Length: 400
Image (tube, rainbow, N blue to C red; front, side, top):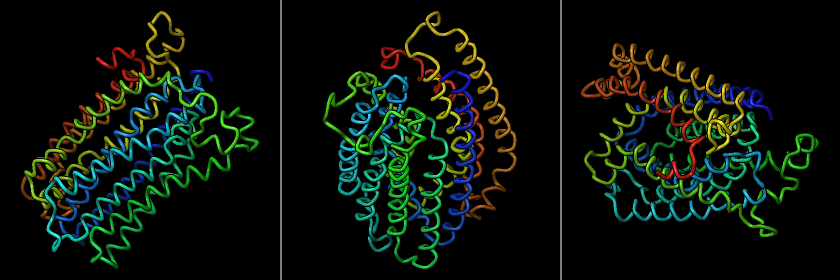
């Protein structure tokens, strides 16, 4: 596939992802506003900080390094062996989720069962949701490498919409279920996500469309782990090790404040809930605009440029195209970041008051939101530059 074709597909993927993320964030935005008036701030803190941190940590550690490594030079992969390698995310996720669940139950401060019942079961169900999501990880990587744009849009859309509807329904009609509401919604979300990917590939593999596109998987059995032939794509293991260390450090930096609140117990659960709401509002742009752009154009960079090759060894036309695209992306995200910075300082208090009432707008909520306005500009520049650098660095540079 030519560089211009890859750019076109990556741009389309980025556009769909931005639209998808905007839709999701609007759904969750109104859902959280709805929930804020029906559940306690303490329960919000437990779900949005404590339980979500368990899920995000286990998933990130299990799959992030594999995703980045297996998407590099995807056209050159022996995909049956690469899929075998990707299935290693499941036992890794099992170990990480089990270990974190033990820590969350036996080593951390547990909420009062009288005020928030079902904490132990909720921890186990969130850990189970990690395994459900990892069941589709090999298929997710194959879909991304072959730019199956609509599949990701449908899978994420169906699973997120179902999660929001179930949460809203249970909060309205069965509020006494407490943490069961959010645990069941999380299981539904990850279960549907994996089901859509598995269902699509069961239909697609062996179809005329797959044959016409020279799709590397010929039977449905090739989606699963197979011992025949070379069991694993061992050439990617050193790259995975490099990314694994980075993933661990990146997770600590990304979720650092949640780890501090969880392990040091410096805020009660109610204060954690308020902080998390302000945090989510402040980072909306970074999540539904910057992140989809980074994910989509990471694929463009790794498919057009050869990892670790010097400038003279690269295709010069492709190199010029990449330089032009990178410059344009940096200008776009900086413009968005400066716009947020200008309006964020003026309207933070009003936005918080309309969203959650005095509970959010009073105190340090407005100050936190203004700080996030400046933080978004830094995220804009850092995200795109990091996306490009990680796509082209040599293995030794990644380790350093």
